[in-house]
Image 1 (tube, rainbow, N blue to C red):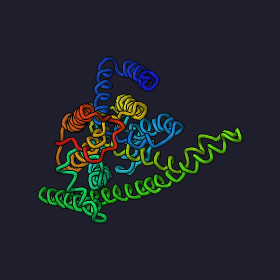
Image 2: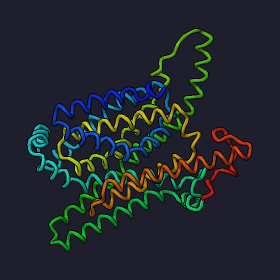
Image 3: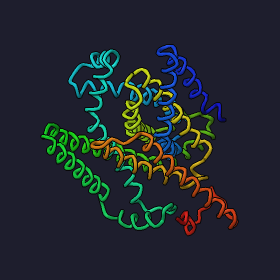
Image 4: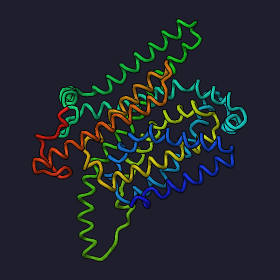
Length: 382
């Protein structure tokens, strides 16, 4: 099971590390290894959230997520995205941007750094909306009950998450503008950039999230119809295509996963520049890390880990909220990538331990962790 799920990740690791040695010797090997660990630590919460969505999709779309999705994640976000950012911000062609990335690494890093406020505002707003929509929803299972219970009541107010996100964006852009003005106003235009990029992130979330939610509702209706069709197929002896079984719902949830993964990868791509400005080493290291995140997502789904450890999804969403705040703060201040990674790891480890404690308590009371439908004893008690 482990080898089947992580086999491609192991293979890509071996190929990537060998390529690093051939490209730049053992120093390049060390950089790629560090970048891989950085990507995994920063994106573990991504795997948990992805698993919560992926478990609703059938085996066909899970395979698409591991094949086509990996190509988008590894080559699109970890290799093409930094080049596109430079091309747009520097108003140059993609070929010039690639040439710059390969032959003038310092200038390339400078241009990516200049584009960071827009990237951070877009990704920060997208992730903040994910966190707020999660925390404002009334749930049977609550982790930090003292926080989640009152926030769930507040969540009954329509569009509250959108209002809070816009307030955060206004405060962030205003603070940025004030700071720039104090330094001679050379970067006042960046405040407008932050505002526009943040609104773009919010709109992207509402469009993609809205479509996903709509088709997720349709999925339930589709499952009932498919169940009837499967019974009919069993009687007639006809087989149905897995593509038909997947339906529009799975396709739009797949798109949602890709946008979600893109938002998660912002911090990894930006953080990688603290280690190297060589785009080849960045692509190798972050690509290896992205493969493990994908494999871990599928492993969590197939093992039913989210059902056994019910607070993991909560911990991952709290990590998303923390990452959103960190991204917005990095518009003005530099934050060490180790801190960014540790915040997510600590929150998920805490939620895992809370899940273990809950399971033991249920077992002691004669219940079962995975199958319990008890809505009275569902909090970690924290």
